[in-house]
Image 1: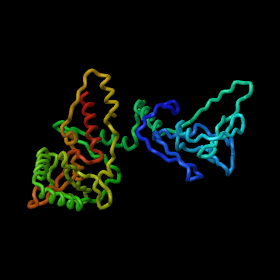
Image 2: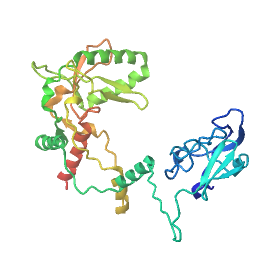
Image 3: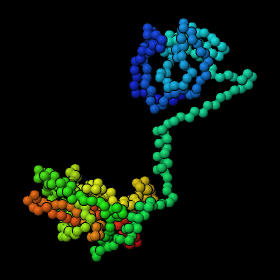
Image 4: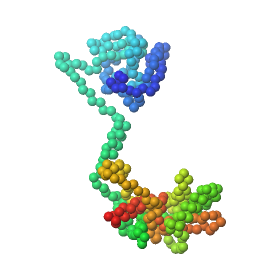
Length: 359
């Protein structure tokens, strides 16, 4: 403790040999503590030149001592004892101390007004980016947005949902994929989807356990009506084939709607995403302070509980067969699909609408 009256947590120390800048013969060896870098030690204020000494007999220890710069070393009393020499008084308030390392200027910066009390107040502005960012995050967390406005695209997605959604005879929602105007220029991904499927098929043939999981998943997908064989192929119809693969850490089949077509565009590129309907985490946490009872639920296969309108099934085609001995078949995915840009919004928006309908 001592510098600026604050306590510092010192983690390291080191031995340094210090010598004058103008001589290699004289050195003083002492132990030094390593201070934290983030404090950015610098002089508190700029100085004026009190002594401009060009003597060759004994130069100044720091020829440009009045110029502001970073502090490299802070010397304590133990070090100064090894430096003391003859004192040369220049004025009543300025002296030069001749030391091992050259002349050191000691004295008062500025003048007192004779016969009057004189005080000085210093204001120091420090740039501390860490502190600034911490305060910024604090205010952002506490900020309550007074109003909400949708972007133009988000408004179009909301209008698309309201104008096209319906509920089938079982009560399930049927929605459409919100597409941009350029969606018909998407091109085709048929060849790359086939190549990726054949690569997947070879991988599954080498791993019987993984193949069993994959086949079971696709059988359940078809049995649930979430995919169905393509029974017609109309000409001049915009078709997009989605490649698929699996992740193995926690087994799940992933549909890659970000795959580029022959025109360099993916199905995700021509979709409008829509507004974020989920609440921010801190808003959810605040609700625990407002109510006495909390209910937590999980909707099983939530995305797959929402159907896609049949006229858009051609944008969700995949290739599949259980064995290389079988004929390669095309399937339509009939529900909201993982891996598509608008899927999360479509599923949550249907949930919100369900709450409104049942209010």
